[in-house]
Length: 257
Image (cartoon, rainbow, N blue to C red; front, side, top):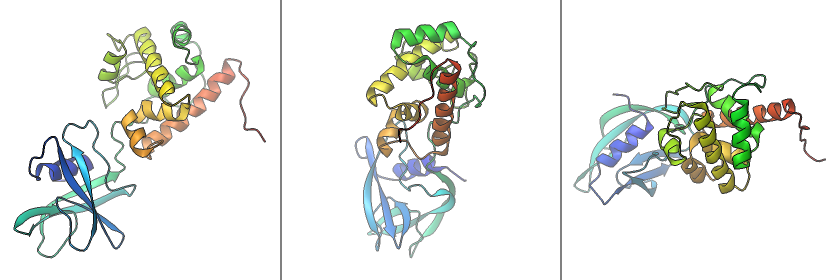
């Protein structure tokens, strides 16, 4: 058995006694090494972390450590069975696991590739959506280009659909009945982007990060999440935005000196 980080956290939670709708997992540090456990570890500095049973996203409690393999151990402590990813005296191997931290959660690289602007793709729909929402046409096109390459029938491995690659819950929230309709997808994506830009006071970088990884991840990391997918996505969208502005006749913005 070789579970991922969310599976390990879920397993740790299930091994704990029921406690309302959240359970406590301990993040323990000893000699600059980190472990997760169902009880405070002797000799470690442990911090209690609440894991919500109903959370859409599993929190990353390890930190940014890349990909590594580990072992979940079981042992008796104070008359009870406890579980930890640290091999303490009296421990027995429970299972092996491999994790990628941060795990990326719902983040994705996007199906579109960076390339030349495609001003002829759904041009009427983008113009109308920009006028209706006040979100810049070039920014909407950059998002669509990165998300789907303007493919109205695109469906991602994580379930996002249409030109703007809206997840089902987001599509419903923003009034998209048919996510594979280019017009509905662009209108819904524009309304969603308007809400994100309002939330982040016009900060396009944070809006793009939230569009990619979710508002929860941006809140948790207090900025752009350090997921490889999200960092690549934000760079892709930013590059495309400049190219679309140039192609649409706007002067390129440069830093003041």
